[in-house]
Length: 106
Image (cartoon, rainbow, N blue to C red; front, side, top):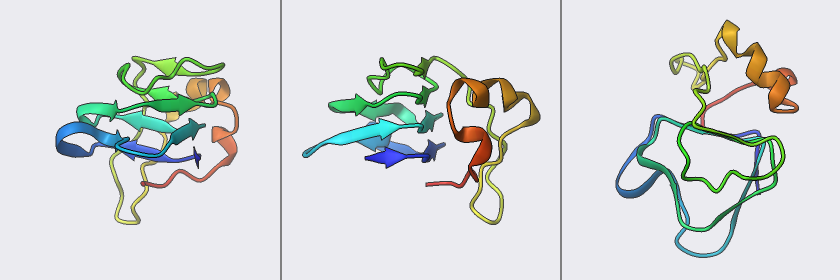
C-alpha cells in the first residue's frame, strides 16, 4: 500500500507515467498522483480513500477521493520536495492527514 506519497510530473513512453500496475496489486491511500504522462495511472489500482488524481485514471472512487483536481503543488525543490502552495489548504482539509505531513517527492 502506498500512503502519503506524491507521484508528480513523471513521464513514460506508454502506460501510466505516475503508476503502472503490470502485476500484483497497488493500493493507494492519502496519495497525490498528478501531472504525469501519458496518463497518471494504468492498470488495476485500488483506492482506500483520500487520494487526489489530477486526471481520472487512478480508479479514485473511494471516500474522500478527488479526481480532475489540481494538487496545487509547488515546483520540485533541491531537497526533492514538492511544497504545497498556500492555496492548497482547502485540499488538505479534504484529504485527511495531509496538513500535518511533510510533502516529499516519490
